[in-house]
Every structure is written in structure tokens, then in C-alpha cells.
Length: 303
Image (cartoon, rainbow, N blue to C red; front, top):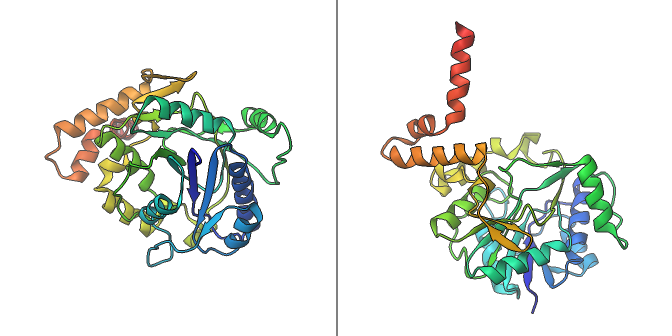
């Protein structure tokens, strides 16, 4: 029985660059020890890629009216057909390295219910990765030279025990909001939210948004507005890696150190709790201190 069942719903392989980075990602997953891979959906080219890499392919996944897979169906289907003790939903452009499995194993030894996530490293990739011996060391070196650590707002994978996330709204994958809700849900259920950034490097291969209507980022898509509604409003999609309860450092769990961003996030949560009775738009204006700075600067410019 594998430790991890890793699952994803890739985009169509029709765009050459999207196809290239997805093939890089899937290949990296197949090299992970003690891990099985499930590809979900019936997008163009997916079946042949699944055969090429000898991974499980399940085309039947529930979708939105526009054809976008539902996160709820992805998790339910994986729980049904996957054999891993831990489940991991991951975006199809993410390269994972062997250290990922050891990081997951360390988290599982310390906690029963939890969710593991981390910040990603962004890198421009325009050619197939050379996965010959030593590839992870070569890639890590390239990332540290040419890549950039993404801001805490991005979460591109969630790893959790099979018992977690038994119920989840019908979010559209690849749109804004659902990943933030995953952190909100864990905090609400009092599951440890473990930030693995100090222990694991995950690599996001940069891309444009040509696969979306109007080539606009998913934040501007109507399905994102529906995701926000399903999540219960703006407050529940403000959760990021800054809301982690633990960090995994050298195989041990530690409380995250205080920083300006974490402090300001604490202020925001406190204000939301105090002014819970206000309408959502008013709560947003009160609880997000960054907006205060923008308003003050605007007033100063006016005078």
C-alpha cells in the first residue's frame, strides 16, 4: 500500500507550453517513492499521457456546467479508488522532489489529522526537465539562482489523511478561493496546518492564462465568484500559508515565528471577530489594515 495517493486534474495538452510543463510535473510525481498517481478528467491528450507514464486515469469526474472539474468530486473519487494513507491534491504544473515524501511522512508521524502545505518557488521552464540521476540537485540549484519564492497567498498542494475533508463544497478547480477555504476549514476543525516550506521545495513552472476565457487570470472568472459564495464569503478565502499553526523544520514541528505579515494577519482576524455583526463589505473595510494605508496615502496626495 502506498503512503501517498497524489491526484490532479490537468489542463488539455493542446497548448505546447502547457503540455510541456504538465509532462514535467507528472514525470516528477512518478519518481516519488511510496506514491501512486491518479489523473482525473477527460481533457485532450490526458489519456495518452496517463498511458505513457503508466499512472491511473479516471475520466469520470463531476464538472461544472462549463466543464471545469469539481474539487469535491476529485477528492471523493480519489478516496474511492486511491490506496494511499495520505491524499494529496496538487496543481498540474508543480514539480515535486523526493524530499516531499519524507516531509509528508514526518508530518504524519506527529499528527493524526492535519493538512500539509507550503509556499512554492516560481521558475520559468521552457524545455523538458532532464530527469537523469541527480536531477533534483540540478533543479534545486537552478531554482535558487533563477527562481523566486512565491508570496504566502499561493497554495498549490494540500496533503492530508483520508479522514479529512469528508465534505467539501462543489468548488471549481483552477479558480480562486477553493484553496484558501481548505486552510479555513482546517483551522475551523482545529486540525494542525503545517507549513512545510522550511523542509521541502516545490517548483511552480510559470505560465500564462491563455487556457482561460479571455486569457485573464482566474481571479476575474465568474466561477471564482461562485467559489467565493460557496466558501461562505470573502472572510473565508483570506486564509493563506500565514495562517499555518506549525512549521516543519528539521523533522520537528515548531510554532511559526512572528513577522510583520503574521502580526497584521492576527490583527485582521481579531477585528473580524470583534465586528462580526457588520455586513461583509463593511467588515472587509474595517478588518484589512493594508487598505487603511492606501486610503491614508491617497488622502495625503489630495492635500
